[in-house]
Length: 316
Image (cartoon, rainbow, N blue to C red; front, side, top):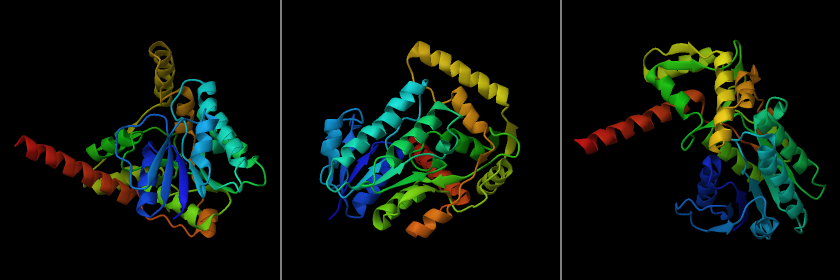
């Protein structure tokens, strides 16, 4: 039975990945800063520590067959904050991996934002994390995956948008003519799983099978079909997003919180081209995405409809 080490296993994607690998018979070793209290799957060993602590990273990866590096910071107000976790944390992991004999095969979960590092501190930190792994030395064997926006069970970032769409309101954040790719979390987990089986090497983009991506008209039309009624287009002007982003920065400094919507994130939202190309990864790994946006929205709709029905039944 093979052993895989996972960073970020308590997050949205990492938790889904951990369950899938455990169900497939992998022994899993997970880096845990804070235990969230949920039970771990069978054959899972938590390792207390963080990306800032080389000793805990050593305990995490010693003797494993593979590493999946999912941990990363997605919220923040400063370039330094993103860099400390995403770039420097990856560099520290690479140093520890190089001390193993032989180093385990490594899959790093990056972001499509890394393709445009000038847009935001987050994007720049992910690009730098990729560079740190790529320059780690010829002893390392690795794959870097760049997914677009990820959604599915457990997601919180796209949840408000999906709820609005299925209520019949379509807030449009992107610039006119913008196109974007998407991916369901289960397809992304399947892609990571495929990496562990086939061990391709290189930098790969992923999407849900729609090669040209979606524009906002596509998204609203799909939502209208799923909900069985019209979805009203509601453009959100760039100046308003910018004002909200600047306000978030101000309040985050006052309240000591890490904001999601910042001026950098607004630039990401307004970028006109977030379309991916799956061809190289599918050829190298045999992976084929199975859940398009229509199916993903349908699953979301059914899950929330059933949850509402259950609440009504309990009240009755």
